[in-house]
Image (cartoon, rainbow, N blue to C red; front, side, top):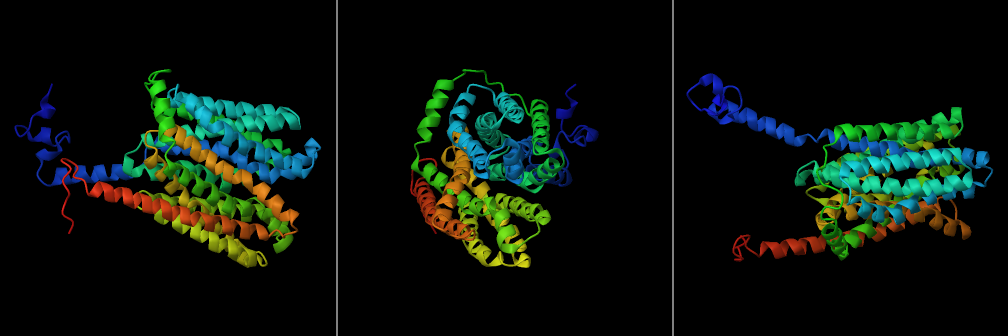
Length: 443
């Protein structure tokens, strides 16, 4: 029957909620409030993608904690074991964009599950092999990780309305901060009791659980392999030529390298400079992850409307805190809050980066998302080289903090340039009428 569409003749019909405007005042207000509450909530799929990134990202942050044990077990030097970090990062940088283009031929849910499967298989093969096998498997896992990250980012923004793009991206990326806070330390603790491999087996289990969750919890995409792939690939490559996009990538590389050069060697600084007992170092490192989670939350809230505020605030705070870190490292009571604040500053810009990338490259979300992940990882991968140059000149460990400050300071002019170009583009739109091209009167 069609009684729910009949207005006025039956009072009970109007009270069912199917015709919210039939009751004066109360029903429309309640319906509007419900819609507003719903609009503030993000879909469960966004949080699922964040969990998947937590599972996969834990493997990246876990490696630093078990590196000495890996070196001893694999009978290689500590510097050789360090190349396992570089291998993963370079796999992301080099392989991410091509895999993202190939992923255009697949429905997004299929691409997400496939990249998680390759990632898990790569870890398993590496755990069962020697150093050389592990090195190659890290590259493969890095490529799969980049492919997942790129597709997950564009999937997340596809689940929400445009005004919540940065917030949704922030939730997905927050999986990395949770990996810093929980995944890395927990995996290191597991590795302490089960040798270094135990934590990585835990990552495999979590990754498989995430893949199953994607199959069950994400909507099916009705695109078919090969459907309009040629035009989409051409459109994405054409969009990637936008110089504004590459400016954002440069900002991403600089700000990421700025804080990661301190974080990657923070354990050594805490041991050699501060004198923190080894048992407490994981807890101090976890504070950086706590700060990262807070920073992502702050950045996600303000980046949708004011992305350049987040970028400038984050980069400026990294400059200040990196300089402060040089002095704070001399006392445990000072370095602990500084590490927390640096984690906050480091991740405030991340949602803004994704917001700007998807605003500039709206026609190339998959490839642009992969490029963003590659930019993050490239920033991570250059830090060992910068540290090697510094140490080769006889500099101390704390000099790395000053390098980080210089990198973040270099990013600030690029942010200002991007902001001015964005404002200029807005001004061009303001002088055009949206309907007939007339120039509006500004008051």
